[in-house]
Image 1: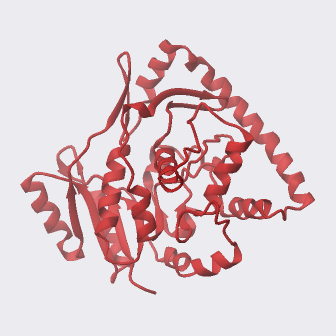
Image 2 (image 1 turned 60 degrees about the vertical axis):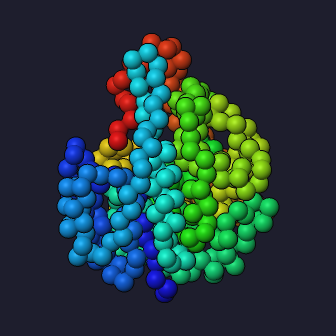
Image 3 (image 1 turned 90 degrees about the horizontal axis):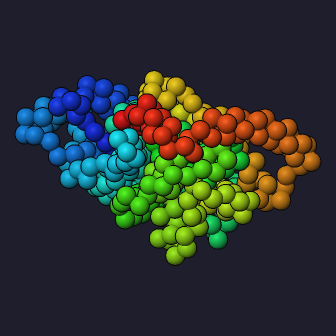
Length: 338
């Protein structure tokens, strides 16, 4: 297989100290990818911390990029604050991918790692997959489908039905495609909006994954396909699905040999059953090829009943948040963990 470029994007400093976990993640990944290019795209730091970082990574032959830190965007409601690092993700990803010297790249975060070479199998067999599952050119925006680690790749018909929401934790594909995906305008405070849509509650019109994808679609097509998290309809769901299956293919972390400890340690694996699996993706492709069987329709109806129950539970849970005082209290208690 041709050599790869692996981009780690994100922070390496925690409380003014070099984060040992980041060094470990890079070292373990390097062990399994000894001949491939590894790029660390992070933020400008002090001379002392830069020296320590360079010394730690020198044996691993890592390309280090220091970017200007755009800082977070902050939602404020009274004394409550909600932080998103969306612009940090966009800049560090774009600059890291742009520096890559190989045609195929893998983008992951500094708080994650690859612990085997499984992902190379899927990169190597993408042409066969394209033949087995032909793409609808009307919805195909990448040269080839991008491999998508399915953490946070929300199923539009699941119990947390965020639309236009691919996962952004792990992406792998052609350099030109991934660079273009992150080569979008930075977000501003207008991204914040209190949104309720049955089982969806968000303080953002577009959460980071949505903003990335919606703005890329808009750049490529000239059309704003999704007005934000206050909206949902059958037409929007179908459009979201078509753009997803023709541009991404989801795989689990276990299948890809990928580890992101934060998902289990901080998020406690919540929402894992609301994301696309590879079998969901195959089913969607067959549905949109008009090849779905009667038996499959029956199983879908049974699943839909359970999803409706879960969505109703979330609706009950989120209903008190319509009251601003309770919402402010909830933000203070459960503000974004970074």
